[in-house]
Length: 117
Image (cartoon, rainbow, N blue to C red):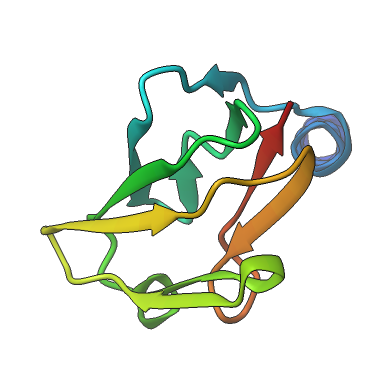
């Protein structure tokens, strides 16, 4: 009984950490091009810092065969694109003003943020 309770508490701690406390590392993009890997339910990297008013090219490499990973959306930019499996897909973003821009799959299970400064 004690072991079961300890395992349950450990699982609760992992869930709290994953959903509320975990902050993914942020990647600073300086040269105008970055590859984002779509795998295991996440975009890696998922937090990207960009310079304002510069065109940017993101490359997505989809390694996850799940249907949710097939599409990436940038709602604020009105960009939606299909990601082929195991092939680089280039998405060119226009020069962006300062702010935060979310990107995600069609069900928002995969998500990321562009921080433009």
